[in-house]
Image 1 (cartoon, rainbow, N blue to C red):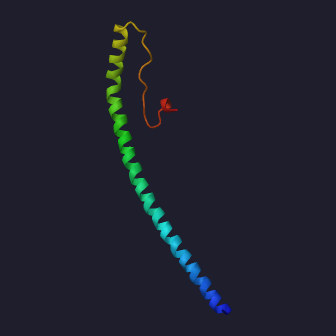
Image 2: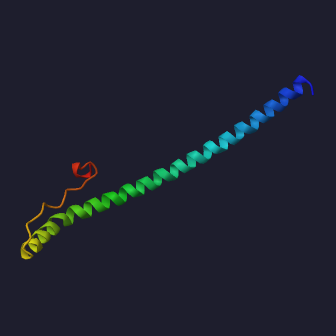
Length: 90
């Protein structure tokens, strides 16, 4: 095999490897889009849960305090305020 044929074979090999790399990058980009969509859905779910909790926190805390009083227990601290950047999450 002369040098030109060897160079041609090497270039074909490089071209195949480059093609595989491009396919892999395409797969990574597609997976990243799926992850972004899933994260967006999870963020919506977390927002829903936080909103629901913020609505029931005060009545639930009141009920908890009354039950503790009836049972003769000392009132424990109130239910925590929970939010995305809440210090209670640390």
